[in-house]
Picture 1 (cartoon, rainbow over the protein chains, first blue to last red):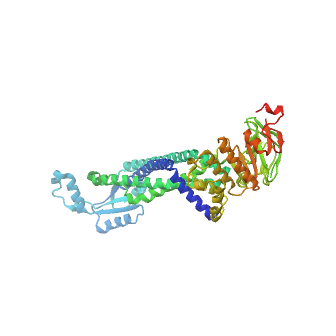
Picture 2: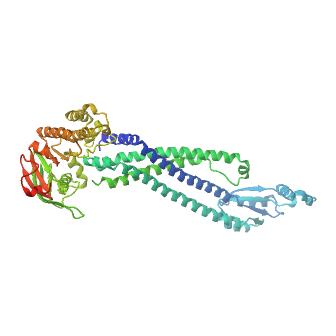
Length: 299
Length: 235
C-alpha cells in the first residue's frame, strides 16, 4: 500500500464521518452511553474494593502483657512484634494510656478506679495485620510468647469481612465483565447499522474495482474516530459526575468523619478510566467495522 | 478481447440463465446484446464482471481467465474494464469530480495523473462545469454521463454498458449512445445490453440476440428484431 493511499484512506474516514453526520452522531451517542454504563460499574467496583480493603485492615488485635513485666521484658515482646513480617503496624500503649482509657470507658463510674494507680495496668500493643487471612497464624505465634497474657481479637468479624470482600470482588468483576460484553454488542450493532445504510456504496466501490482493504479501511478509520470521540465525551461526563459526587460526599461530614466509607480520589482512577474507555472503544470500533463490512464485500 | 466457450449458468435455485453459450468479441467492436428481460443478458454481464461464476465453460475477458480468477484478483479484472449500469451507481457522498477521481485513486494512480485525467474525462462527457456538484443535484442523463466518465477515466480497452439507457428518456438515451459510439471510434471495445429497439435499429452495429439463455442470432449491422418468426414470440 502506498503512502498516498494511506493518506487517502485516513482522509476518507474523516470526510465520511463528517458527511454522514447523523449516523456518526447516533453512533457516538450510543458509544458514550454504553461506555458510561461500563464506567459506572468500573468506578463502583474500584470503590468497593477500596472500602473492603479498608475494612479488612481495620480489625485490630490487642496484645496484653502481664502487669508484672518490667521494661526490658516488654521490649522483648515489642521486638518480636516488630520483626513479625505479617504485621503491618503496631502501636505501643503504655500503662498510663491504658489507665486513662479505662477511666474514659467507665465514665461516671471512674470513681471505682480511685486508689488504683497506672502501675496496676498492663502495657499492650495494638496490632494491624497486613491481611486478615494471617490472623490465626499470628495469634498462635504470639500466644506462645512468654510475657503475653492474652490477645483480644474477634475472629468472627475477621472471617465475615474476608468472606464478604471475596463476594464483593467477585460480584463487581462479574458486573464489569457483563457490561463490557453488553457495550461491545451495542457498539458493534450500531456499526452494523451504519454499514448497512451504506451497503450500496460498498457495492459500487467493488464494481469499479476497489480491493476489499481499500473499502474496509475508511470504515475502520471511521469506527475509530467515532469511538475516540465517544470515549472522550464519556470520560468527561463520568469524571465530572464522579467529582461532583465526591465533593458532596466529602462535604457530608458525618460520613467523612466516621471513616467507615471512603471514595477513591478521581486522580487515582482517571488514567484507568480513560484508558479502558479508549481501549474498549477503539478495539470494538475496529472489530465492529471489520466484521460488519465483511458480508457486503462479497460481490 | 472477450470470449465465452461453452458457457452455461444455472443459479442455485435451479433457474437456467445461459445454456452452452459461445461468443467472441474482437478489439474495437461495438456489440449490442439484446433480448427480453429474463433472457440471460444480465447474467452474461455478471459473468464478465465475475459477479457470478459460470457453472460450466470458460470466460476470458481482457486476457483474464475469469472462471479461475481468485477472489482477491477480481478487483484487477474490474479495473481493466469500464462499467456503466442502468442505475448509474455513483457514490452519493462524493462530488462529480471525486466520483470520477475515485476510479483512479483505487488504482493508486499519481495525484498528478489524476488531476490531468479527471478533467479530460469530464470534458469528454460535457460535464466540466458540474465537477463540484453532488450526484443528487444532477438529472438522470447527467448522472449517467458521470458514470461514463468514471468508466473511461482509466482508459480501459473494454467498456461494458448494462442497460445504460434503461432509466432515461429517448432524447437523453441518444446522447449517451452517441457518447458510447464516440468512445468506440477511439478504439475502445463497447458492449451494450439493451432492449431499446429504435436505438439498435438506427445504429446498425453487431447485434447478439439472446433468448431463453441461448444465442438465437449474431448479426453484423443487425436489427433488434429478426424476421425469424421463432424469435418474435419472445418480444
